[in-house]
Image 1 (tube, helix red, strand yellow):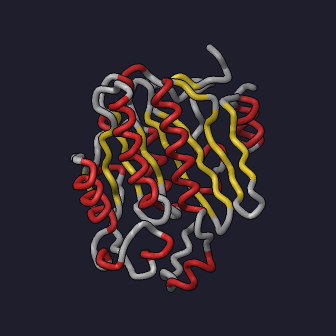
Image 2: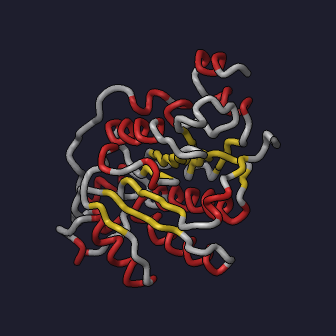
Amino acid sequence: MNENLHILSDHLLHRAVVIHVIGCGGTGSQLIPRLAQLSKCMVALGHPYGLSVSVWDDDTVSEHNCLRQNFFLPDVGHNKASIMVNRINIAHGLNWVDQPQRFDRDFILHGDIDFIIGCVDSKAARREIDAFVRDSNRRGGTYWIDAGNDAVSAQVIVGQHGRQIANDPMRLPLVTELYPEIVTGEDDNTPSCSARESILKQGLATNAMAATWIYAWLAEALRHGQIGWSGVFFNLEDGRASSIPVSRAAWDAIRPADSASASGS
């Protein structure tokens, strides 16, 4: 096997690719329209069904969400997932599904999901996703694309896990394997900020760039059936981006020392 390429399972090329997006806030609301574009392009290029997407979020749109997030003033007071999915379905003639509730690993079957895209800033939400993906019994496991960011920088990391591939040395490591601290400790439950505070706290383009990198990975991987990178870090303050190659050496350089030594490299 070419250690510099990750090969996707053939079944993703011959049926609808099932994606669940967890969180429809800053990054999630920017991502959903890009997924609709990707689905249409896949069909135009010969994929039989494109994407089948479900969107999870239990939050409602607030007025300050209409600045940095992809919502409008008439959306205020309505559920984020429902508003976004309804808008996309009408615009593109799709039949995607809204889940206006908090993601829970017990709500869905493992066999139904190819990709979970986590657009969340909650350690509790990431713990739920992590537990779900690790328990997957799919032939090629389930992919977890995690997006995390601060004011001007962010990372998008693609991993895969499941019972059948847990010991595969070339499966893509999960974000929780590279950065275990992302799910440890308690969440900061600071109340939502005002519109001005929201802009000052986080860059205007950070979420949109994270959504674009997720779109870029999926577009490249699903079009060609293979890909040579499993994540990216970017910083908008200095205009830099750095990808994570598909390489055990690169992964071991990131993950904690005890985990890297245990991987056998």
